[in-house]
Length: 339
Ligand SMILES: Cc1cc2ncn([C@H]3O[C@H](COP(=O)(O)O)[C@@H](O)[C@H]3O)c2cc1C
Ligand SMILES: O=C(O)c1cccnc1
Image 1 (tube, rainbow, N blue to C red):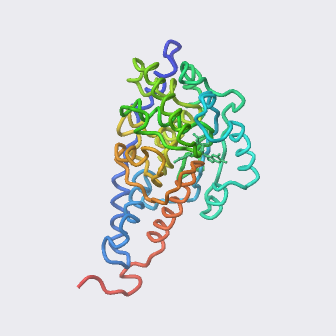
Image 2 (tube, helix red, strand yellow; image 1 turned 90 degrees about the vertical axis):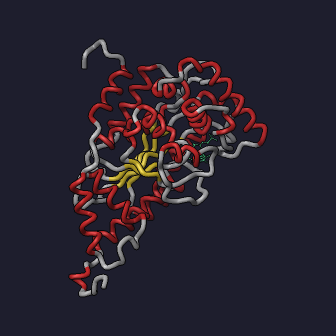
Image 3 (spheres, rainbow, N blue to C red; image 1 turned 45 degrees about the horizontal axis):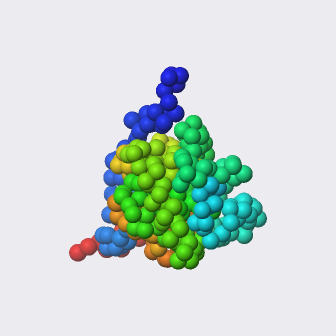
């Protein structure tokens, strides 16, 4: 890499070589689907899911042999402003809970045969309070995004990026307000359950941060650096690396989608390999998905994070693929076709 290129410029260069969907694999899946013992189209969006898997994996026979939930964890300086119902110590405590197998994400991954990896991002050093100054330096934001890219290794064929980080719904809401326009109250929700006063503080903190950083918020990587967090940078890197490695991505809720929204703002095509696993009732998530052009698979009023909604959706994706792979054809089963 030439020495005079700044870290964010290196990231921008990656967008020049994003792989396209594989038309041949897509056609192969459609041809097989037409022969399966069901009326055409009767499996609805399950059929689209298999097409999506094939097109992005570039496999005529798509696989889910190595599905992974990758949870990125970080702490946020902005919690000092009283924007979460829980203390920042809960981030580390929940990581211990993940390791012990006691969190919701552990149970969902176990139920659907999904791997779980946790990436801890310097929890003892929270990012700067973004209502006072930038959350991160450019070097740190870029390095964390690169770390998120490294987290995606060879054995993975389906990815769901998740997060754990007390205060991160404030960061995500600030990102949406910066990308799509304020006021903060259009995007915020109660996160872990702040009361009316807490919600008012959250809105005021975000509105003052937007005023502080306003002139610098036209570039999505500057939005990440100023208002984001390490887990959001890590998820951006993971989603980008998945694209470069032809790994389809299932998006989680309000916080995880802020990483996807930043990539989408850099290049609309950058998240074409992603589907929305679910819609969260948190803040403006439904509106975010509309802007990203993603129709959620599930709508279960889940507002947890950890990758939990995406992991539930992987259960549906697995069911879709099982139908496509396992069903008999009209010919093999001796079932009469359409008369
Ligand atoms: C026990 C517990 C487990 C969680 N698992 C995910 N989150 C979720 O809540 C946090 C964001 O909400 P806020 O912005 O209000 O702090 C994130 O850590 C997110 O992953 C949790 C939160 C708590 C308290
Ligand atoms: O929808 C989410 O991802 C979410 C909502 C509340 C708290 N943490 C995450």
